[in-house]
Length: 365
Image (cartoon, rainbow, N blue to C red; front, side, top):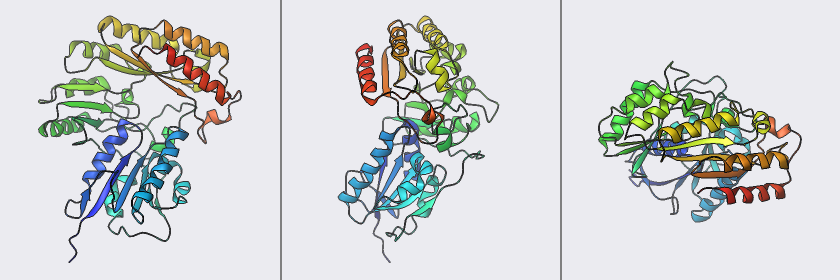
C-alpha cells in the first residue's frame, strides 16, 4: 500500500474573499493523503484560486500557471474561481492545466482530485450561476493572525463595468445564527480579529430578511473576538446605524473602505452606480462627525469610457475637498460581455496613465 502523501500548494489571486475560500478549500484535503506546502516550492498539485476583476488579474493567473509548470514539470494544475467560471475554455487551452472548476465546484476539489494524474485533455466543471442560491461557508485559519469570514456572496447591482454577477451569481448569505457559530469556532482557535468579507457585504440579509447591522450586533456578543474589521462597503448601504454602532463599540475597528469610483455624477451614471457623489460625501462627513479619527479609504477608477478632462477635473476637485485617509486608484479595465465594453468615448491608454499619476499625487496616503 502506497502511503506517500501528495504535496499540494495553493496560490490565491484577488480579494480577501478569495483568501477565505482558499483556506476553506485547503482544509477539505484529507491530511492522511495530502501535505500542504508553500506555493514557492515544488509540489505534486497546484491549486490556483483566481480573480477576474481586471485583465491584469487574468494575466497573473496565466503567469502563475507557467511559473508552477516551470517549478515542478509534470505537476497537476487545477485552476478554480472567478476567472475559471467566466472563461473555462480559455483556461483549459493553457498548456499544463488539468482541471478547471467554477465558483461552486471549487469547494468539491478534493473529490475531483481523487485521481490526480496528468490528463490528456483538461477536465472542466462549471454550472450556470444565474439561478443559483447556494452559499458555501468560508473562513481563513492559520494563514494570518486574523481570520477572514465570508458573510455574503454574489451581487445584484449590475454595474456596467463589472463581471462579478456573472462570476459569482446573485446576492445571498447564510442566517446570522450560522455566522455567529462560525465566529465562535474561530474564537475557539485563539484568533482575536475577524475581517468580515464578501462581494457586497452591506447587502447582507437580502436572502434571509436580515440586515448587516443586525449581524454586527450579534457578532459583537461572541466571546474571545476582540476586533472586527468591516471590508469594503457601498456608500448607499453604509447607514447611520452601522456608523453609530462602530462609534459605540471598541470591538469594531474605526476603518471604512468605501468605493467611490468617480467624483463625477455623469460618470457614476454611466457606471450604473447606485449613488451620487453627494451621497458619498455625506457618508464620509457622517463618519468624521461620529468617529473623528477614523481611517477612511476610497476606490477610484480613471479612464472610464466617456470620461472627459472636465469629468476628471471634477473628480480631482471633489477628492481634494474630502477628509479621506487614502485612495486606491485604478485605470479602467475593459471586461468582456459588460455594458461598458460597448460604450463610446474610449479613453486612450496613455491618458489613463497620466490621470492615474495625477490622482496618486492627490492621495492622502
